[in-house]
Length: 124
Image (cartoon, rainbow, N blue to C red; front, side, top):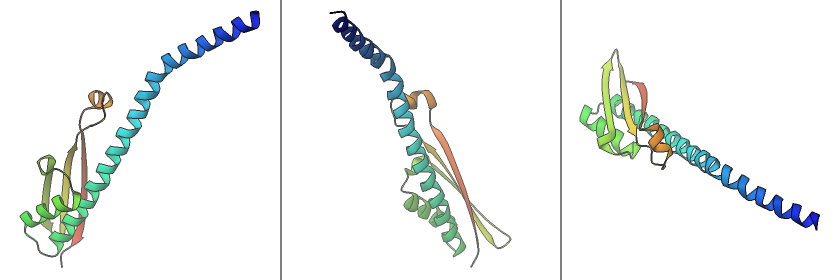
């Protein structure tokens, strides 16, 4: 009978441990998802900067470069800032994007993340 009581106690202990650790693991899981979303946005910003630099290198106007960046990155335009410079035979495009943190709880702790990418290509 003592063995049965010990098993009951151990089952209760496992439940308490789960109740204590589950919130920690839930927040950790949400943080990992948020990091993945930010990395994805970073890749999109880098791609958009390269596409913008390519458009600027072949003679597009600044507005056409901004449009190429918006289309290539598939990012909300109201969160994008694009700077275009043509100096010494090269076109440089800098893209700045404010990525909202979308994951609950983690987003409230971190706030929005600003991402930036710059690409340079020779003028053709």
